[in-house]
Length: 132
Image 1 (cartoon, rainbow, N blue to C red):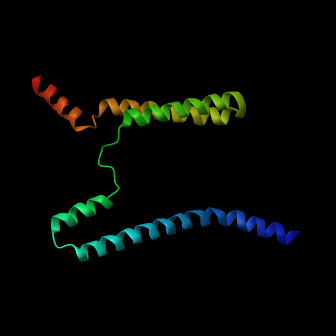
Image 2: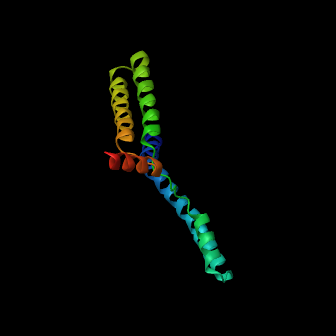
């Protein structure tokens, strides 16, 4: 029985290492296949403009800026939900966590209104500043 408990404890502790390592390995394999695909395509294309378009297809990053108002509202309501869950079921620890997340959400909403993020909002802010 002692060896079973030892193996179970070792497996439980190593799970904290196994999961992140497996995720990094999976992301590496996924990116490796994309790199090989781009290399193969670049060997068969003569026109550099077409190559640039194909490389941009594989670029998965979002080009839009982060909308702090939207993410702030989501964070705010997650915090409120955790606070209520702590009030009803768990206790003061989850109430504190919910209050902290609610405050972070409020901060994100305020930051979203203080710092314009889209090019249209920036243009409007510059035009308003130039008028005054």
